Image (tube, rainbow, N blue to C red):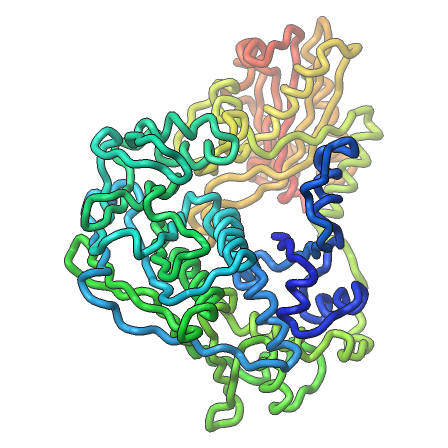
Length: 593
């Protein structure tokens, strides 16, 4: 979960009360967050760079490191956290935010069609008559960084740009241009760079190189211009130096470009809600018209509260105690969720403000009720039903088979569930039909592209990594494979399998693998049969490209194919850099239940 670093004295000033570390830790626990560490800037510098580093310029101010839920974006700054705790403590009411209509064409944002190729959405807002202090300014910058790392997914989904509105001239346009068709002075620089020059400049920068990669290979770059064709920003990399914000800034223009419109609105609403209290009048935000390529006009931000309805009994039932309706309403008010009962006195109408984008379902309201009511106030009771834990039948069978395989002299291995496409198919001499393996949409490595459809690649790679071990090698694995299945709700399903492999110097050991199959069937009391029997088990010869022709058979039980065994094909052995012959067995074990 994200951690917010706050100066203790500034936090206590915002809360209107001084706490001991223990008292504040208890308050955090009651609110559902955690005081992770009490430190100082000097201590943090020494911890990061060593005791010998010069810390004379570092501050002695006590810093609270507070861990907050990943979906509570409103708690990522001093303003949001202090507001939430003050409402929780009953010192203030949940805020009401107001929006004023757009000023007109002078602040309008027009989106050109070419942006659809890279970052199609933009949302905007204006904070008028804002007053920055050094601490407020730093908090404003820190919140943007926290949002970029969290909901914005390192600017891949949303990129935030904030500008001094008095240094630019509207209306604004959001365009996508070839990298050599524009130039500007980036933030805190003195020279002009083209779009391509910006990429070259920041590709080696430790902090900015990851953002430069996002658009580096695109034929067009997203750019925001003012009416004088001055560049405000090149999202998601850098703003222009012309419109940079300072302590003297009085009017802030906020733009969020995105590939996800919902997340862009959450980000915009969060920034506006956290810093509009510093405006004059407080909690007021000026809206901006955004003209889309199809001519439609949207107005942002929307800071109105939405009403969520849920059953009162459902919300209370999750706490395990009986809570009166009036206590429910007071408790939810403490969590910035003003509520009331509908006319039927059974339906709870909850007003969800723009800062509570994490509330999506009745269970979220249930959780906040339990927090505000107090977990310490929930009396533990004995369960009304007596149950005895027991393993699932498949898990129990898996453990029994593991024990018997070990008793037979086989060593268990545990291999990766993700493999490369080559390991899944080509190296096993199998053809990828596109309808078997579940692929990863954005694999981080060529070694982990797909979910395995067989346990054999893992066993073969294990032998490959242990080629210097004394022979024979007998190994096995019991684990899941994943295959595509359109009939399931997620489009794929897990299959529990057992795989065993034997390799030796002069013999493939087909009889050894056959023997372990017979041993397992004997233990499971499944009798051998003669094809085409519909009960018992038998093997019959088949052709499988992974195995040697004429030395491969399928295992049939009660008329159903449950596995394959055979001598591994020499080409497969070469693909895994193995020099000794080997035999393998792979069984579905669910039919054995």
